[in-house]
Length: 313
Image (cartoon, rainbow, N blue to C red; front, side):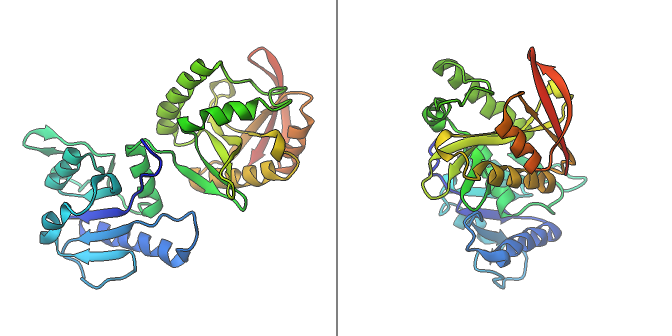
């Protein structure tokens, strides 16, 4: 599916007043924070229900609940996400392949079944404290198997890997000295199979992983960086990074890794993180120390002696 697909319409229908209010406030918070920021998604929120009809923001429109079915067909399914507590509306999302969030009301399961049929949703939610435009944008992306944009820095975009970047990934790893201290890629077809499984399983299960780093101005792939949970490290989260040869010694690794550490702390509630470096990789050692990591111990991973560095967030 093409990455040019975009979420333009969020339809909220039949939500309890408290959840509708939280959703509205979360949208207003983003809008008031500055809609000019490139990292902010920009879909409109249409609130259908018995709420105050006053329009509260440029991207929030309130409409009577009874007008929903008449309006429904004007929203292209591939550009729409539905948030609902109504089984009949969730059934529409199932029928038209619309990304959806089902609002669960304690003591009721009306949103789960209709005519004896179990209905599907991309997310079943009770609390709406965290549900705003960025969160819903990610629900939409998962539904359509589109990569998440994780964060932006002054010069870079960090996002999930998607298969159209595979040739660029091979070009990146072909740079002189790129695999002196890190594992090379598999041969092309095996790497393609590996990356497809990684996208489907790692990203969907954990919500994080190794991401790609793109230059904000040119859009080109300049490296990889991210977070992984390795069994060999007892499940401890590990920071990994690699920057392509043309972009080394320009501060990109520091810029991106600093942002990822902040993301890990603020978005994932991580309190401690490690990185594992091969002896002799002085460039990575200097970066780790610059980021505030301290050498903890030597260990053997995959039959290789490695240095484990730790940092508390």
